[in-house]
Length: 250
Image 1 (cartoon, rainbow, N blue to C red):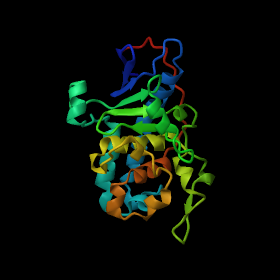
Image 2 (image 1 turned 45 degrees about the vertical axis):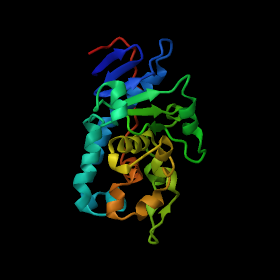
Image 3 (image 1 turned 120 degrees about the vertical axis):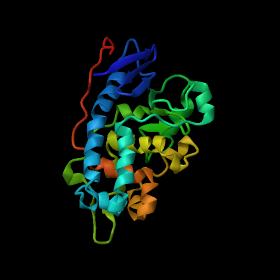
């Protein structure tokens, strides 16, 4: 495990930076985030292996991306997450942090973060687990992340596509695991082509699976929900709770 201390408030794990989760008296939040990131890479690799099958995929590639001609671009998007590719930030953000290409950073919320917490809870129908800060390397972890179960639904609960082109049962089922939410956030973080302008834009249509299904092939590549729903139906295993006592460095 390559866990390194960055400073009093942050650690680095396999290229990801995690800040404001390291409380001296309570390591629960940090352990939960580390446990999640521990399984993020193998699950992303499973998604990539499935995406390489294109329309022969048994996990919904054809439903969300329509054609095998999109394989290269879809795989590249997920590969950037596996590689923990540095993020290209705005010139203004670069002046603050001293680099135009920092590593992505997950950050817990605390005192002084009330505006972000309000974004986390503003829509009772769609409570996001993450808030992306456009133009930066930062992803805020909403309080609900620490409550939601981080695994996919049982297969019998997965939605099916009917002859009428509609999904049953309901749009939200593929977004019932933290992995899908993380993909949604990371696609936005790495996807400058999505033209996100405010944090609020990252949570508006996260449950609208039918909208994602109805897009054409070109539109699907520019829709973060397409990647999230596809990944949410592919995640195969439970995320473990990884315990770190804070005494491992290197």
